[in-house]
Image (cartoon, rainbow, N blue to C red; front, side, top):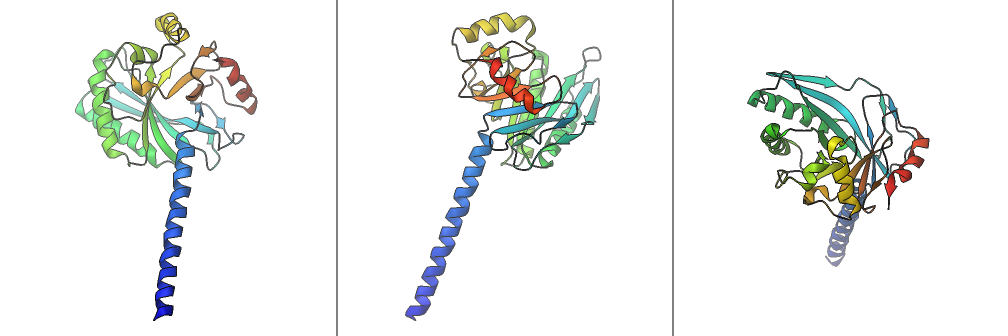
Length: 256
């Protein structure tokens, strides 16, 4: 009897230790992935990321482009080859483009098709998050907000939902407030007429007024260095295919 109780007690202890060990391992892995401090954007060009350190660098690759035109929803899947080593924190990016000449209806059908197409990218190999790149006009924001709400409900809870954000959204607007997203990445390149004001705002050591924008920055290798908080995650765009040598250029694009 005593021996049986001892065996039972030992078995319970071993099971508990195994669960704790698995829990600690899972949490550590999750924390490392979600906190990757450097994310490389891989756009619609041949990309081979075999040279990166999966413990330090993540990849956000363009998985598809969705064009909204009149009542149409045109899905263009990635056509260029992509190589990403196992263990990398991977983000599947969907670019949404609204036609400027043939203004989209932004109908419920377009909303449903777009949400379903983005949700599918969460099942791609090693994907831990999905990101939407949509420079939504004021007239398109209601559609975009509804898209985010519906998409969040369809995505698995373990999949993060991120978006890119025009820098002006992070300073002047509050339309992202309460959006069901994990991160809005302020885009500090291709800023157009807003560039001078935004650069001045950051150089004066101001922080973004929108809290969702306070986790990261997006910069490009072909634009001037930006003054940023280096404790935050950094997304980097490259106008050409990435090489190992390009990594050394990133530091020159950050003003500390």
